[in-house]
Length: 80
Image (cartoon, rainbow, N blue to C red; front, top):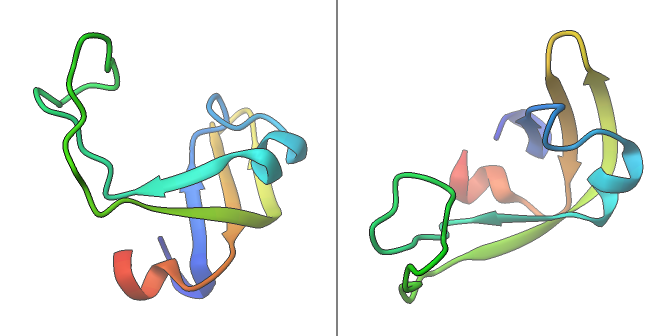
């Protein structure tokens, strides 16, 4: 998270405006035995996860593999 609640991620994860605006952005999600994104056969722990939605796709670069997304609310205040 950065100033003005701008979220950066990889372009190979979010490849266009539609994906950016229809995805959920979940913070504070944890899985027992974590360390990777494979949650198969792993028990989720009780967390204080918070989900945000996007309001805009600000920039995208396939060459540099990044996407800048404006999130609703004030996630930078909690996760900055």
